[in-house]
Length: 169
Image 1 (cartoon, rainbow, N blue to C red):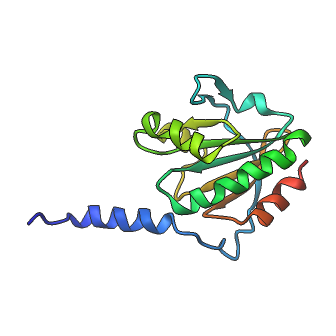
Image 2: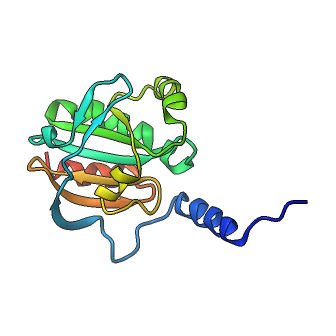
């Protein structure tokens, strides 16, 4: 019988724990000191460029997620609804998938869920540009000037996300 290496077990425990729905810590209201969103040039699943810098002038929700993460999947309908409701007022949503084999699994997932916003394939470099992603989902709210105004780790309900966004529209 094969033994599970202790470090591998620790990594699995940390990964599963990070993907659980959790309330924000008391000191983390979601508000952060404004910092410029990284100027990244990404590509969506259809091969179209997605430039975060080109989204200046819009309020942007940047959502790091994965298909295997239950809280991430729970958040997707809220993101779809927010895009429908506020897209005409200047809201954009960008999903950054951190899935392995994303090229293979994402197109069907995006179609099946009816995702109405650009989804790009993330990488360690993309995550590092945002200061590292410690758990999923991780969501950044960016104002019209391209400054990150809020940062959430873990599932946040629609009302809280909507409050963070509508104050910037």
